[in-house]
Amino acid sequence: QVQLVESGGGSVQAGGSLRLSCAASGRTYTMGWFRQPPGKQREFVAAISSSGGATDYADSVKGRFTISRDNAKNTEYLEMSSLKPEDTATYYCAARRDSMWSLRRSTYHYWGQGTQVTVSS
Image (cartoon, rainbow, N blue to C red; front, side, top):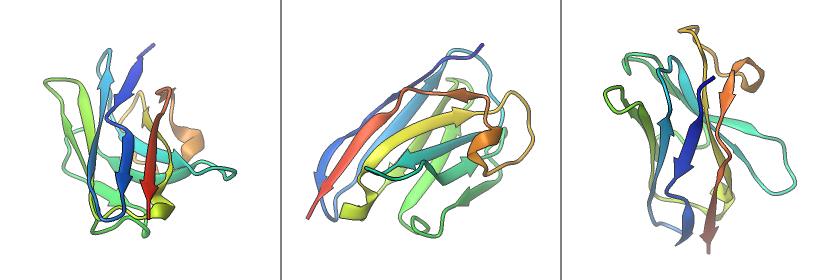
């Protein structure tokens, strides 16, 4: 069992930036970020392959968010810039126990506890 711990959330004004981190207790393969806005379902944000060579993003964050990972530290990151009020959500780190590529929430095996991001206008 792998534990995931997110950090870096907070409150920021529109147009600002935040960097989320997710530390894993062991080796992980495909990893992703998902978010759950208030009153809505959890949705895909970004994913990264085991090597970091492949990434994908939700259309709503393309060009503003960047996912990356440092396998030596078992840590993934989400750099968020040009933040908008609609980015307000609880952000969750997720990981698979294999290298299968997936953007579907239901296919991820491990989840963090979530970190809150609030963007004010």
